[in-house]
Length: 163
Image (cartoon, rainbow, N blue to C red):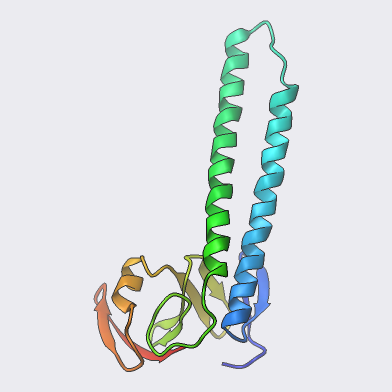
């Protein structure tokens, strides 16, 4: 893979150079999402504080309950993103010959990063798919090495390289 390949998540572009660059880029993306959710939480909390009880009591209670549900949803997302950032920070940058947490794996069906499930990084030439080792494919690939073969969903995978 060439050094100048560009990858993007949700429109963000990053240079694909090595595992450390991949992890750094994903962490930046997660931290941006985290900041956005924290800002949204502050905004909703301000709205709740500014809401005054009107003569239509049921309408007020319904509105307040909907805002409280929104706060709960945002707080859950913030907790999830914090866990993702923490998990990403605990990934080893050491190369490995067998697939484990933090491995970058080239197969005949694409390039995979095992650590956290973040979706797909795209470029014109390559895709990098972020998976957890707890995913069905991750469970099958754990501890496999270059040259190993397996079948997943009626597709034969050949592991070409593990880093």
